[in-house]
Image 1 (cartoon, rainbow, N blue to C red):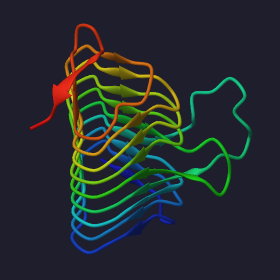
Image 2: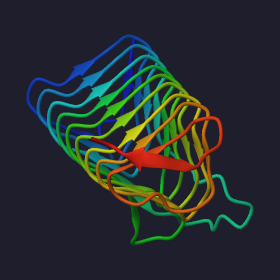
Image 3: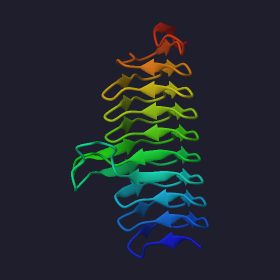
Length: 188
């Protein structure tokens, strides 16, 4: 049996799986799917046709040692897929949101930290980790087990190779080698 707050606002055709939790102050647009064991926490507003797979936790408190009592929100666009065990954290300060655009695919175990801003049509492979305040522009591809340091930016259509450690901005259209974390050419 799922636990859905009576104060949650659910659109037409929303499906909630067994053992899922949808807290108060959540808004899910039409035809969203929340799979078994997924948790959508207070402060999340998601558009239409989003899929939250098993045991995803969306809207958790920011992981920050100086976290204030009042935190921000999570705002999600339309047609996104968040696979198993994905975590997305609320912004650190009230009035600010962690933002995910439209048509993104976030694979199992990926983490989007507090105050992250993700554009549209991007892919995050299994175990991709975005630190706080990271920006990922449209159509970027972040491969598996990539760790992106806080405040870094991944440019439009950039592709980051698996296991890379990103500690500075990646310009648009660049390929980053997974072993060295260095730019190795254009993403053609």
